[in-house]
Image 1: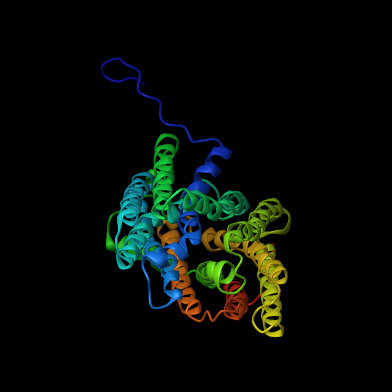
Image 2: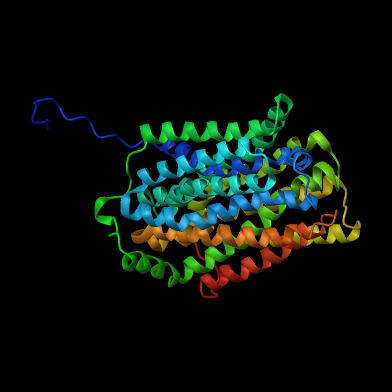
Length: 412
């Protein structure tokens, strides 16, 4: 086909190859993790610049970001079902860049929290659309495989992000960390814009009407598997975000006081999560999503019980090596579970993938922000609060997963 002028029509952008597709999706997801973990070593410096009534207040930089992500996902996901994935993602990245610039130049802690909220609103686009784009192209075990591979790359971000944050702090102010976030967003904008075509097929686009949007949300709410597994994910994320929000206080300043060794130790724990995601991608075809994820959540809860026991036996401060081994094992099992829970929740919702992904993302993220905030406020200079959080939320997640399947034993 040619233009009326006789010139050849420009070639339509081709979909990236499998590995590049996974890498782009991982970067979309990784922006969220980078925006949290890169900042953790800067908590003491930010607290020094903006004194607060309690050291626990600094945790709000994590939870404000999560609130932004959770509150905006529903909007971005719904708009993507109407307008397509690509323009909506680019709009989100513009908002994220604005939040990063505001955070880099703020002069008050309250404005810093607002900037983090804006960052989260923009980052929500990548969080929700990554899942929707994968669902546009894959389903079933292949979807779980792609999500596990993307999660493996995504989970390497927490391994290096705190170390990078520490290096940036050596070179200058904590404000430079927000400049690094800005740079990552610009890289994603250029790469996605140049290489990723629109993945939403025209016949699947929803009309721009509140009735159609409401129908998509209602379909999600009426799908037992989606609600059950989403609730389980939200509870597990609550445990993880409680750990992330208090990690600096646990390792760097209050409990174990390891100082500049904190990024290395945090990276070692996060490394097992990446290993688990790789194993999940390899095992999901052989074992099945349900069986693998249900094994992971039961193991997670058992290890959480061991964490509580260790905290009780050692007055809330078990030996550093013991606590690290237990928390690392719990994170390993967490990563074995989450991508499969996500795929199980999304699998029956292909016709409303954008709306469903946004609703599930908003629901799980806001749940984790609220519960992690409440649990984080309980930090008392020991590891007992985070250990108890893991146990309670793990046990509740098991109940939710069984409810999602009607109380039946897991099947492949």
